[in-house]
Length: 121
Image (cartoon, rainbow, N blue to C red; front, side):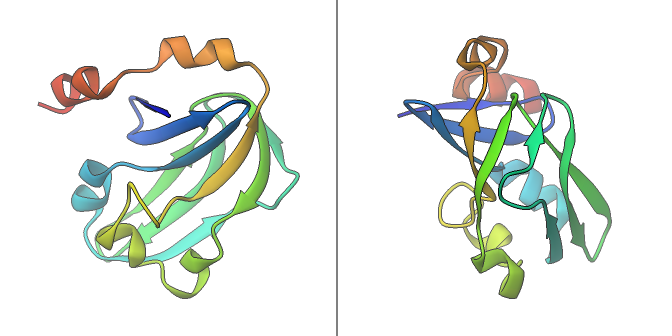
């Protein structure tokens, strides 16, 4: 699996036409203690750049933006009862969505890990 990163601090891993989306560890650290997440529903369709959720922390609220076009096929239910999991393992078990990609070519516009590290430096 390949992982890509957006300038909005989302990560996306892709396996065939299904992708998993979450926020980066950098974003989770910047937000501080996460206390709530608002997620979209299964079946919701979106385009790259659309707001697909909101994360609230003790410091601020921050939107989650779609890194690519797609359709939500699963929202991580763990986050409803334990939004703080995003602080503990944001690039692992605390993924936010599984999506069906509409246009895999859009992945070319995202960064690899080295590019993301340079971006946040």
